[in-house]
Length: 448
Image (cartoon, rainbow, N blue to C red):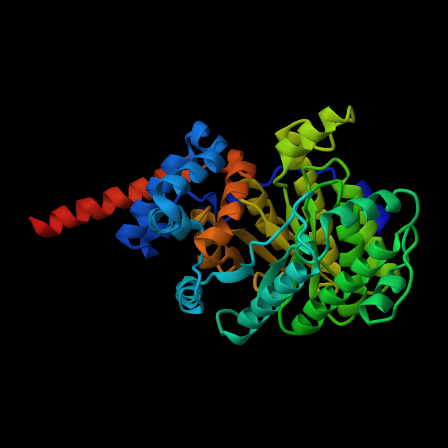
């Protein structure tokens, strides 16, 4: 049936917003009535700054200058009430709990994210990876032990536990020969073996890393769903291989480990179909986080510098078609077997959200059955998240936490990678303004 789905995904007609509840046009400023006056002002101020291209493009440099001028403490005092408070849940468990409880009261579910990731040249050795493992296990524990939401989720960056250099080498090796998933599963279980093409030191590091990932899998199985993030194309094949091995081991009775598919990549549809086939042949459940993608500028620059064709779709429209087509594939599979497949529609794009809701209705998929949920970043796209939650859909917010220092690289990367999203928040800004004006008018009426 996969082949049939493959041929029928060239997006089945435009979605019809008129057939949906009026609120799903996401035009209703009352979604923001739950926010305090201070939160409205903060969001408006931050979004105003984020819509200035020169600030977003140079935010890394600007922040390091500010940090030098103000000192570590002064810089934290400056950042905490503004950008940090908008996009990060906090540092101490008390602060995080406060943010999570507030979110739960609005019908939103948290998806905790430890903002640790590494790129080439940033590797810092086994000790650092073991420290990162401790942070990941803490995240599993926090997600599970607090009653913030039913069915908790968390995010995992594999490069926090496995060196990016080895991921790149493995990705190159995988273009020539496939690794057997059973080999990786046995290594996770502690069996010492040799991986084709790796030197002794690389082999040792890979074994240690698989055992670290195994600890995350064992801690989270049947408790917390772990969503593995995709990263750059030059390391993604290795990340997918490791994620599929984790799925084979931990997803026998449900989707506890999920993989991410970046629909701005030309190959995303074929990668998704390949993994659907793999999940059937290896008989494990498949969890899918569907995103458009966040590393476009770097992917394009890299392809141009190496004289390769760009891996990213030429246009926004092609990316939309790719996203909506993959969404259709998954929703159709879920409608046939909701226990075997799960998806989080992780997007700030209103049209894709509406399309997902529309198709769920057409295919008879339950709003709150758990097989389909929606996801947006903390502090962004609240008019979509809150409206969906009010209509009874399952909505998760990606929630980074940690100190100002630890989350700063995350914030800078996200700002630069999400330039288009940040510059496209005009609508959310307008809705925030409408709600602010309504409160001011109400206050004046009450005062007079």
